[in-house]
Length: 117
Image (tube, rainbow, N blue to C red; front, side):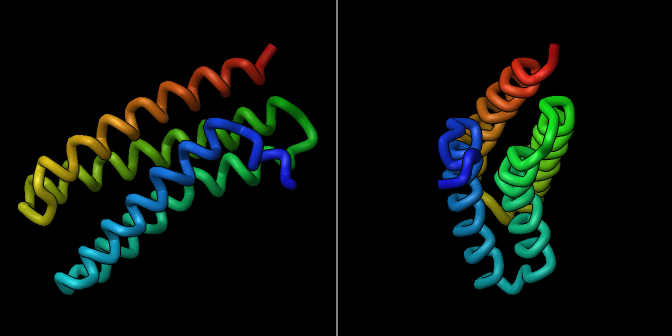
């Protein structure tokens, strides 16, 4: 088992990423291929950066990757807000995802701080 698989923050990021991947599939079915791919990429980047950072040789480097993951979560949140405003996403779907992303961001920030002296 990889180290990152034991991290609650990675597990949560993966769960949200899977939900966002499903949303990307829905966007593709509406012929929104570019938006779907960008959402999929940003969403996957969250858990990918946590996983990549866990292989770092220093806690400082790992914290840097967690910060990148947090920035990807912000990018993802921005896209969800954009999709809601363009009526590509209903608030009943978008708002719960935004709440989950906000919670994940807090979790990532706490974890990042725990890695630093």
